[in-house]
Amino acid sequence: MDNSCKYKPEVKPAHAFLEISRDFTTPAELFREAIANSLDAYAQRIWLRASVQKRKGVEVVVIDAADDGQGMSMESIRAFLNLSDSRKRKEPPPGRRARRMSGYKGHGTKIFFNSDELEVLSHDGGSPVRCRILGARGELSEGALPEAEIQEISLEELRKQREEWNLSELETGRGTAIRVVGYHHNSKSGLEHGLLRDYIKWFTRWGSWEPKLCTVAEVKREEVEDLKACKLYLRGLGREGMPDQDEEVPFGHAFPDQDCTDIRKLRTKDEGDPLRFYVRTWAFANVPLQRNPDKRVDFLFALEGDGARREYNSMLRRQGKPRRAGDYLSEERYGLWLGRDFVPIQRFNSWVAEKSEYTRMHAFVNAQDLALTANRGSVENTELELMEDIRESVQKLFQERIQTHADYARFEDELLAVERHRHAKREGEDYKRRLKKLESKEVAFIDSKAFYSPTSETDLIALVAGVQACLPNVLPFVVREYDSHFGFDGLAARNRSLAINESQHLFVEFKLDLRKEFNHSFERLDAIICWRASVKDGEEVMDLSGNRGTYKITPRLDGTKARFVVVPNSGRNVEVIVFRELMKEQGYEFKAPGE
Image (cartoon, rainbow, N blue to C red; front, top):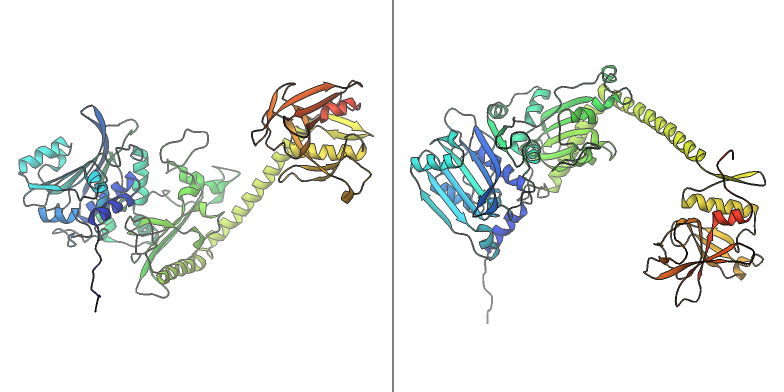
């Protein structure tokens, strides 16, 4: 009996929609997708806004993305809502240059489904269309596909709706406006104006580094000229000074205005480290790969000092200044970025630099043949052989065209000189610090030998070892082994005359200051040697296991004092030796130098 059958695997649509919408993890990615869609639609003006509105007494986050692109018909909006159904027009409008299409999988727009309400207004020259989806995130979470209400509207209705959304500039012309309400559970985090502006200039097509490539490599590309004439207006949450007005964000990634390699001139800005303002840029356009010459890369590499960066990048974290949403350190952002469409995707700093050097790099590689993940967050879908070819081709360019350049050699020489100067300066400062520290120490003399008061646990161990060498009987035991790396610091024996293998040894812990919280266990501990004790007679001391003991000070007949941590239900108490007091009892008092 034949029990075989043919079966085609199925996809659970709601689950697929939900997972893809959740793959996009930050609100800024919504703006990235909106920019890509607008540019693919040949928009010349783009508006991006985030605001907080009150609806029925409840605050809701509203995100608007609008453009004057080609617009969508009812059929196009259906494709816009579908999964993996991209139907973008590749041909440009009459009289316009063709653009590079960045959206083709039909995944990116699903980020809009992570919302309570999604509304689309679009006009492609035919009948305007309005689309509305309520509760998309909730429906998907329950395993159901949300239902979209799509209807044709009149030009007057379009104009009125655009005015209500503060988009009167569009009037009744072509274009698309998308309103997302309650994105990602109404989270405001990630929608701050400064953060969004920085993200747009780094990780979207509007922040393309292709204009800089064209300038440095002296090439001309039509798309760069086209997009330079376009406008993007941004209004995030909490814009300083003008919270209710749009900011015009210029096209292109931010770089220093010009290179500056004249070290003499740079010393007028910073005598000690002129490289803080050093800038040198190299660019190589349309370079064939070594093993795949039919595939090309663009490579831009700049050496930039931190001072030069701070003149154009206000998001770099500033020492002593309050943190701002989205700020970062140079090492968290700069380096060598690999990407597609001139949008950085993933860093590969090790391709051209050691870990200590990449923070001075402001470098990009563009490869249009990269295969990206659905959320555009990684290039890991690219074939390994192609990735290796890109890496080797970039390394060859770096080694043969940049490292051999006289400017790079001079930079490295100056960097070495700066590091030597900085090291020497640090050594001098460290000498002064340690000398001042030494001068503040108290001193005691034993047989004309000076012993200084400790300022650390390591100092105390050294002091006890040195004193015990001069006064073998100063302690009621002899410390035979020291190790402050792990566990108890000392191993000691009370019988000095027996050999090591004949004696039972005890554990000793060294503390600069004995406090109520003791970061070791009382178990197996016989003695604590401290320089001073902040804990008072009768107070409790707790070990790291939560066991408690009572600190007891008892006078002896000879006038000295015995100190113990008395641990209940323990076979022994822990002896405490306050070494400063012990030395004083022995006739050796630590005093300020000169006393």
